[in-house]
Length: 398
Image 1 (cartoon, rainbow, N blue to C red):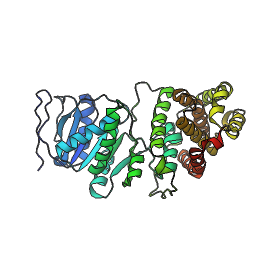
Image 2: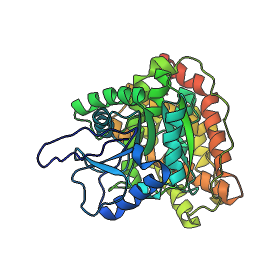
Image 3: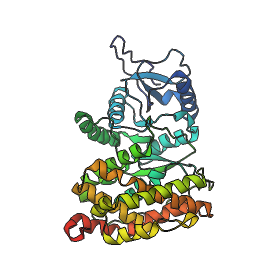
Image 4: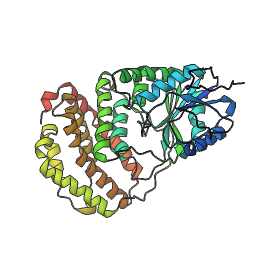
């Protein structure tokens, strides 16, 4: 039987709490915390659970699940390096075998999804369990356009959401991630994301995707695209740069292990939204020619010029053109062709062009998931272009 104790930070007394699963939750008010605890209790045996909550434990919390206090942390919209350091420290204290880290708004996760995250790590050789969510077609498009196809093409993984907000970890994987995260914290980058899927690939750790159904996605305080896209793209580009020796070797992405539920085909964006995206792309195509020409080769510049002349619902960003654009921006980021902030800002209107074409495709009856998979395949097919530019950038100067 697991022993029950609380960590009371007010008097600095700490007693060991033992259990087989530790769940680290984000800081939350009691109204949000209690539903999460109830879902955890229905998903996993209460005697095997220890739940760590940053800061002081609210008096209103009740139920069979053991709750302990974790070091205070600033709640963000995604998991950060600091979360992984805290989770590993708490796991050592509690002597658990499995670790779950759940992000903000975890009360929207299904008990089945929570259970599968834990059980997959507990009962198989899996070191990293990542949820796959069913989202509306207009949600998570930075992931669909950039994060997923890049991670898949370079790290030979089919994990659909490579920047997870919930995950399950074995203790060896948790320790590896905490060591990497500690270096970021020491460099005053504790709020940086950690690219756990890429790290698992490099370490040769087994990763599995879990069907988590629908989930409410937390939004950052400043949710503007001009902030979010450069932030996550810069983080991924830096991680790719650091792992170049790994991803330049030829690898084959394994086939899909199962058929996943498709997203809804009803886009939330209106025709006016799509029109404004196309207009933003066209204005940038006129005003950013000088900057884009420092990054993109003539063929890509010609492709964008032709695309700017396409009207309305016929507007589509070709998959190969978009793959080349992202690869060339990655190269320019590595070479510091211009200020990195300005560089990634110049990617935003190009991304809006891709989104406009993606939505037009859905409105015309296309399957959004099939389009995203075709895009990822285009990235894989063109990987040799990126490797060549990476190794011999002067041969391909625009």
